[in-house]
Image (cartoon, rainbow, N blue to C red):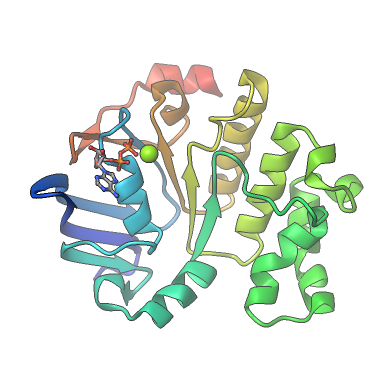
Length: 237
Ligand SMILES: Nc1ncnc2c1ncn2[C@@H]1O[C@H](COP(=O)(O)OP(=O)(O)O)[C@@H](O)[C@H]1O
Ligand SMILES: [Mg+2]
């Protein structure tokens, strides 16, 4: 395996059984993502995005094929190993932020570190840079409901980043935001990518996908490279 590959998926097939019928949700999907890439997975509703994301995020296993994430063969890993991979190698970012409402900003952000067994004091110290990077210092003691959607998504991004994961995995990260806040989040993704973070972003929106360096398109369970519109990319910046 080449050392610069973070994601290596080979000939992945996934089927759903619906009664006596079988739905072929992912059809021989192969995908390589290099360290430091910002890639968008673009596809319409029902194309297989969530199915693929669940496999990339180690929340589901492929029926056939191999998947290696940052050197670990995920397709043959035990549930215990998978839990560790989810916590240490993947920073999840969801459409609806998925923050814990009864926790304040800093309590939400340190969660992944506490789950790794850090003490609260260590975790708060370790998260200081991330909180500053995302401009959340003034909001540290606020509860999610006291923040705008864009700010809540920044908290969710901080929580995803704080453990220094191998990949940031974002599922429609701008889907619940107004246009300006959405643009801010995409700008932030580009900045995080420039700082060296590997980003995999799932979206149904071509304009959103244009923020990434590379686009792959999924249609009816089949994945292929999509030629980027570089002019639009310049405009998006
Ligand atoms: N748990 C499931 N059981 C049966 N069929 C499913 C299940 N999840 C998804 N599907 C089907 O698989 C296909 C891909 O779904 P999905 O990955 O959710 O697509 P997307 O996220 O792009 O909308 C769709 O036809 C969907 O109906
Ligand atoms: Mg979906």
